[in-house]
Image 1 (cartoon, rainbow, N blue to C red):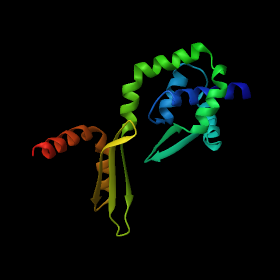
Image 2 (tube, helix red, strand yellow; image 1 turned 135 degrees about the vertical axis):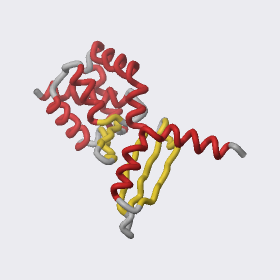
Image 3 (tube, helix red, strand yellow; image 1 turned 180 degrees about the vertical axis):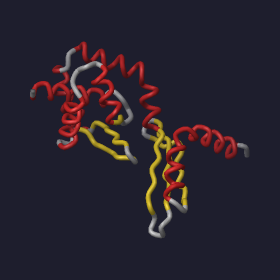
Length: 172
């Protein structure tokens, strides 16, 4: 069992090493489950162990956990890269090539909110491209319901809002 779990961890590290953006738990799990390499519980255990040993880092935004490989994870992968078969590597690379845009799109547009000291709420919305924020907006809102609504609509409206702002700001 430990050899299998080691392989699942290496697969996760390999996937995260091949993208320049974080991936959600669901994104990591979907590929591994789709290929029927293992079950969800082994994936969760592998992710938890990788996180607890500092080989991957988790960032939580609202209800999503985003994972990135750490430098220690990259170094570990370099030592044990040969433990992943060429067939599995090929599966991963083909999956990432076919789904790169949709995977990136899913995690590049983020929104979260928090409560201020005066009882209002701040919706923090942004779009990331290659580790740089293209746009970042902080909106002060009187109720939690409004903050939730802004966060829920950000993903679908962000492109239009960005285009509008660029048009207005570059008009001169």
